[in-house]
Length: 265
Image 1: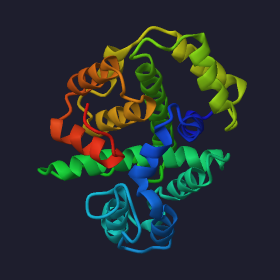
Image 2: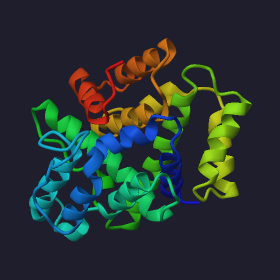
Image 3: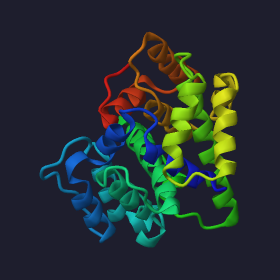
């Protein structure tokens, strides 16, 4: 079981009714294919024609265009940028949730969260953030292992967030597992999710895992925002406590909400 593939399946399935909309906003709304197609073809600029969501100077589309334009300096060449998965993820979203290539979408899920974190940190100002590992193709076994470890932490964080309003009973667990099953979850992956959903909340342990890693902290917060509706006081409190525990700058939190099109908690 590759945990990055499982993360792709979880994000494809949409843990809540808003998950897919928030990913679509982050990728650029209605002009996903046009913009991603241009970027994968090597364009160094992003268009906002007919677009919604976060395209433009402050959005993911603009970010990836800029990354391509500076690829030699940032990642050692366009071939090293892990954006192919974003195209697969975009295709899955525009295809109405049909099953897509698991490995590609898994890489796209990590790249999307990395891009959201990078853009939120960049828009805050000050020292420029480094390019997250999820946006760059791994160059070694060590980097591949690091990506898998990050995927596991992100999955645990999403499952933890789902428990914020104390509504994850057996019926809710089966609903989540049933949705993910449609995207190719095997028995090992099912057991992993089942264990994570049934165990007590572990917010402090997750927070400790990201201490001193601002990009990872921003990714974990972004993943949590994909996992819940944020329509109850308990969920709003959880997000506020998570941001505080992760020591995220309030401006970074606001940027993440803006990129996803979600009002601040």
